[in-house]
Length: 294
Image 1 (cartoon, rainbow, N blue to C red):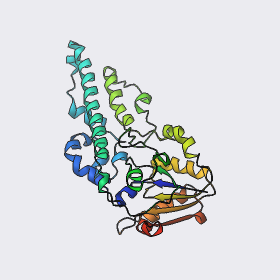
Image 2 (spheres, one colour):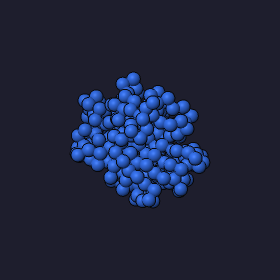
Image 3 (tube, rainbow, N blue to C red):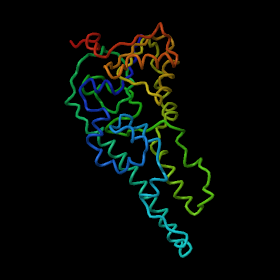
Image 4 (cartoon, rainbow, N blue to C red):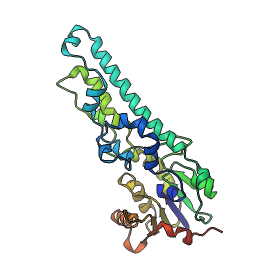
């Protein structure tokens, strides 16, 4: 008999850590605003609450028109160096944009100070964990053995996988050649690759970790703590549900006047097939009473 715990960002936040995207915005907005202006979804999301998903829509035309000087037809007739120079500059500017955003995100995650965490509960020994967070809160604050924690998207001090789940991540390779301006085909492919580079390859990750996700044996309970169960992560939940069909589910989430995460996540779990009679959802504020510290 085993208990499998799925950990989301709400857990780190409840421990008092600055891991919501609001903190990322506060620290890096001045540095990244010149880049993120080319991602239209950020226009309606001023505080980056959906930061990763917002990276799935890139305004290639706006970027091309405002970041690089485009040679005229006369210039290109005069010399091919203008075409080559333009394509090279597009590559340089997009590479700068991608690298700056990736570096800022990784730096922010790595700057989270676990010494500021406030432990509020105790996990019984023997629990196994699937951690969607990059932090090592479980290991460093709750003394969970590292071998009992699967960091499905990487760890802060190692490789971090982040990004959107829109499309299949192969936009640049599947684009039709530009018939109107074939001389700029290289630059068009470069621009299309921006959303590819920010794509989170969930299908690939799931296949790499399927054995890990299905190895826990006689799982009788699945506990979800602080996970929003967003669409991009649904395949992982379905895999776990299929691997342990007899387990009961306990879903702990945040509830406030503005957002009832308990009801929202409860309904999402029902929608992927968790049986109603095996699912109970509760406010994460009660976790300390359910799993009190000694």
